[in-house]
Every structure is written in structure tokens, then in C-alpha cells.
Length: 453
Image (tube, rainbow, N blue to C red; front, side, top):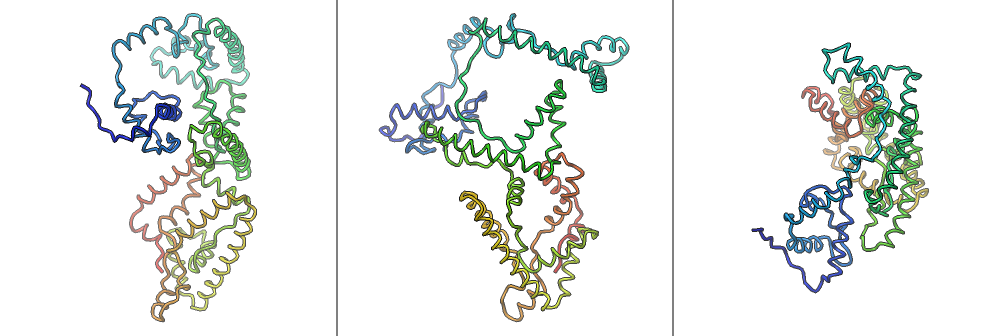
């Protein structure tokens, strides 16, 4: 017997039949297009806040669904299976089995497979000791080494047959309209692409014009590393395109939401940025956002000193900075404190100018980031700025707080070198690799990166 699940009951009068049908419709609208998982798996990933409608919260919708689904059978009877079997017997070629239909046109072989089929028997005879896998590897290499003129023969044959295939496919659709499932496409506007996706789609078209026989894997391998190697100027071009596309998407979506209020799509869902943090920073820099100054006099001194210590190993730089700082007189330290304060004032003026050039929503974003950065930097206060008793004042000026962690110093030092050596790595992969490298360092070397004021 089926086990019963006791679910919290909501007030019956709150949920009309129309409300319950709207709930089920909202759930359907939030299901993945290729939903093939067990119902419990998909149910567990459902975002109930997106399902919510009218005055029914996400939690209320979830509870109502549990109540309804408890009354619905979650298995199929033999009767239902037989009904499916009858449908299959009547239409054996419907859906994914369409290509098995005897009238379905044969798809043309790619240029490489034409070459492979033409040469395979010859090479198999010459090398009977070779396995099919080894034979495939050799022929793949031979094809890649073919002169473009010889390769063009296979490409032209493929393109000619491809055109013929498309004509035959159109004829097949006309002759068998009952087999073609014209599933109604969703009218929800397509989500905007990221700068990298826009660039990739553009480059992919160019690549396939030159190499129409290339596989998806080959295209990805060829283009995968190029995005990370693009100059800032070229990357900005795609950042601007992505922002334009997102703006258009927001306008279309707002109109769509007005026409479909029952879908309960949030404003946050349509204004989510398509830029990464690095892309956003590059755009801001290009637009004139000023660089945040060091948080205190000690950090300012270290930044200036380290700029002239490029030949000194990273493990020694902070130690040297700390030692040099201790050698400064109080007057010299106070001068750095004054200089640091001036930089902060200049930064505030430049930031205000930058904010004035931005639309309101962008101003809010920048101000939010500034607030967040300010909160993260509170611990790195300038030793000279702390007003205290003569005893503590002396101690604090001689022993400033470390503004940066040793691991951060190590990462910043190695990151550029790794980016040059491993351009194919993404930012997150690079960060993980740097973390592993740091963990593999001996304690002695780790200590060498820590500033000892």
C-alpha cells in the first residue's frame, strides 16, 4: 500500500479551483525544457519563489502542491503502459525515432569520414596488426596533414550532398506531417548572452567557414584559449555588445511581464548582470572609475617601495618593507599618513565625478561596491591614524597592522606568471591552482611571505 504523507493543510477557502490550476500552470512554466529526471529530483530543485503568485507565497505554493500531489498516483498502471504501447505501434517513428523511418533522408558524411571510408580498407590491408582505434588515429592524423587543395575535394562533396539532404528533408516533412512534432516554442524572450558567448558565437561562424568539417570539440579547443588572450580593447567591444543586448532584453521582458502577470517573474530575474566581476571592473576602468588608494600609510609606503623591488623575490619583499618602515622616523611616517589622507580625499572627488556620469541604477551598484570594500578594509587601518596614549601610540607607530594576508601577496605575485604560462585557465581555475600551490609551500617559505613589522 502506498504510504501516506501528512502535509500542513492550508485554509480550504483560500484556494479556489482556479487558483490551484494557476499554481500547476506556474509550476509547468518553471520546469526545465528537457525534464527527464525523476519527479522527486525535479521537485527538489524547483524555485518556489518563482512559482508564487497573487498573495500565495512560495512556501504556501509548495505546501499546496504537496497536498495535491499526495492525492495523485506517482506510478503508472499496466493499462497506461499498454496505452503507450498502442501509441508506439501506431506511430513507431514519432519523436526521437524519426530518423529510423525508411523514407528519412540519409545524412551526408562529413569531409573527414569521406576520407576515412575511402582510405580505411587500404590502410587496414597495409597494417593488419593494427586495431580499429590505432587505424582511426592514423587516418585522423593523415587527414589533418592533407593539403588544403586535396581536402577541398571532400569538403565540396559534403556541401553538395548537404544541400541535397536539406531538400530531401523538406520533402519528407511535407510527405509526413503527422510524424513531425511541431512543439509550440515558448514565447518567453531569449536570455541575453555574456560577452564571451557573443564573441564565441561570432568566431565560431568564421571558423566554420574556413573549416566546415570541424567538430564541436575542435572548435572549442581552437577558440577556448583565445578569449583569455584578447586585449582589453577587443574585450570591451564584446562587453558593450552584451550590455546593449541586456538592455534590449530588459525592455522586452518588462513588456512580456505585463502581458503575463501570472508567471510571477521578478525584476531581479531580468536585471541580473551578464558580466563577470573582471569584465565589470574593466568596463568601469574604461568609463573613468578611479582606483581605490591604499587604506593606510603603511600600505601606501609598501606599495611605493614594492614598485621598485621587481627583482626581489616575493617572499622577501614584505619583510623588507616592514624592516624599512621601522627605520623611518616618526616625522617621515606622519608625512606618509598625510599623503595617504590626501589620496583618499582626491579619490572621493574623482569618485563623485565618476558617479555623476552614470545612470541611477549604476550609481547604486558602484555605491554598494564601495560600501562593501570599505567594510572589508576596516581591519587595515593606518597605525599613524590611531590616536591613543603615548605608550600605545609609540607601539602602534612602530608595529603597524598587516593590511594584506601572506597568501594574498603570494597569489598576486604568481597570478600574472601563471596567466602567461597557462592562458587556457579561467579565473576560478587559476585561483584554485594558486591555492593548491600555496598549500604545497613549506612552512618556512610561507613565513617568508608574511610581513613582520
